[in-house]
Image (cartoon, rainbow, N blue to C red; front, side, top):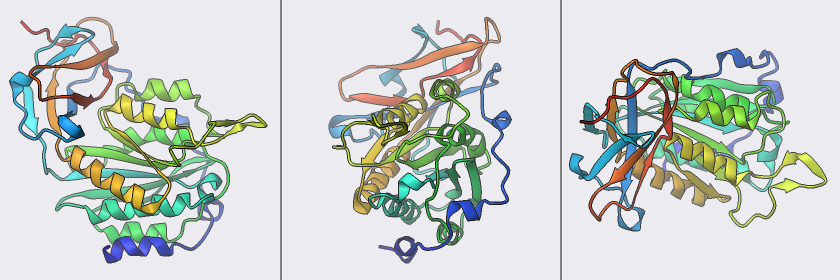
Length: 319
């Protein structure tokens, strides 16, 4: 284990309430919502073969792009393998993360992410509590800044999970690299957001930046809701999975540091085996949500991870 990663296990310090005592409540007016016709639709995707391993030599003839079930002409096909990535890290700082070693597992995951960094990668760090998200470290290539910031975090209070996550797609644009990803570390609990779950789902439908959800919980846990305390949800696997699926990312589950560190290793492998395709909408038709799909040719591709759709006008039809 690297020295930077090992430092994460010595986390001590202030509670979030003290750290952010001077912060104003998060405003939802800045929440990301792609409700206008976009100038270009960028579609990152990962193709998986046997045993769920990424395919790194995909040919353009092995898939076709569809929007709302109609074939679409793309004008880009690029491999982004091994390109530097801008990572936006969003860490749950609520009181539920103090239970059962959840925070230690989350910190191990961040340590592993930094340990796997490639030349040119940059990272930003946000945490969220009952008032929304707070930027601790703007984008940097210096992992020591992330480590130092995490040394002042201790989970406390409720959580505005939906409000915080809605801001991340816009925050991720501040990274320097074309390839971007948001890393969400949470147990999925929300008990203080202004946004409803349906609002969050709608906002994430057209997002081009994949969100990788690292669910801090045991996959064998029972009920998601405590009937005696319906406003205090236990870990919500379904929500974490939906967030990842909508954006073309993936969800991982774990409760121990080594499980989350291994999840990050898998995440890195998949993220650095991405392809990019894209097109310019025609400007014709209504600005509305349009669903993206890839149809696969040949037998070696088992599945593909791709964003769910985009908000905009009609795509160029394939002739």
